[in-house]
Amino acid sequence: MRMGDLDQSALAGLAGSEGLRFRVGPFVVHLRSDEPQFLKTLTRFYGPVALLKGDEPAHYHISIERVRGWRRWLRPQVQFAVDGIYPFERYPLDHAFPMYEWGLNWCIGTTAHQNLMLHSAVVEKSGRGVMLPALPGSGKTTLCAGLVARGWRLLSDEFCVIRHSDGMLMPLPRAAPLKNASIDLIGEFAPQMALGPRYEKTRKGTVAHLIPPADSLLRQSEVVRPRWIIFPSYRPGGETTLSEQHRAMAMARLVNNSFNYAVTMQAGFHSLTRLVRGVDTYELPNGDLEAAVTAVEKLLQDDLV
Image 1 (cartoon, rainbow, N blue to C red):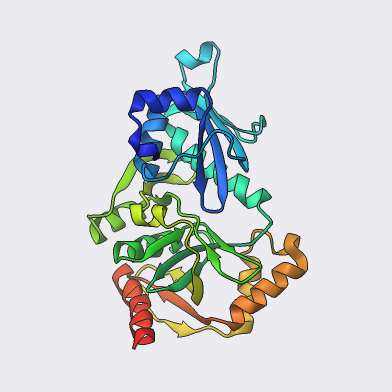
Image 2: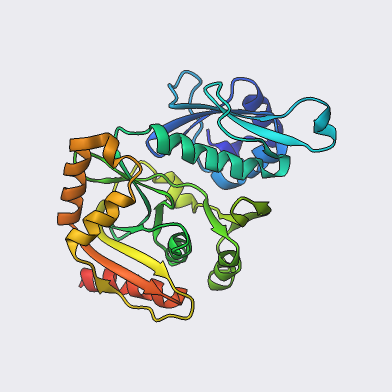
């Protein structure tokens, strides 16, 4: 049974009692909540995801809870809990979904050290994996969304999960948060792409999430071999130029973009060096989304010849 197979009443009953168990890439989440609007939004994003049996061991036990007390009448709020711990400040009730997304990011980024994890978007087409590592504000999410709009499979917008045993990239398809001007940019570039609600006045400005394509969610157990690493950097009004990046420089930049390189130690070093030796590395300064997407697509076309 999939999350979207339940009507809202049945979903709320299950989520508010024993909770929902489902896979998020290589992880299992156990989620409890009795907030109907949050659950409705969750289903809109992750309806194709299969629900697991109640005895399935979970990596993260999460609850999205409404704050009780007299203030709930004046300023309704929710809080994020994981394993009984409340690591964040309270959020407005209508921001429950982005709180869940950012909270799960925090859980994964701070605890999941069995694989090497880089701060990078990952997409795939024709069996070729493309990593887009970048610092915040570099246009990573926007370029990722543009590629997904052109038929690339979304593996992740935030985490590149590299399996130590063989170097394969493990999917972690989630809602991709577009921020501020990027929201309308993607709306104009790909009006067919489904976006969730706009959340105003978050800590990152206005945010709207790209809904993961059903195919990406249904194939979240299918690993992919990396083919290219492309470092994007958005420069408004600038030229779009795809140029080779020296592997030594790429290695250094990936170390700086890693969530857990220092924690994984020797295994992380071997995984990262194997990765860099086995792919082609590029940088992609760009000032136009269409040109940036076209540059990546041409790499694929040339490789398929």
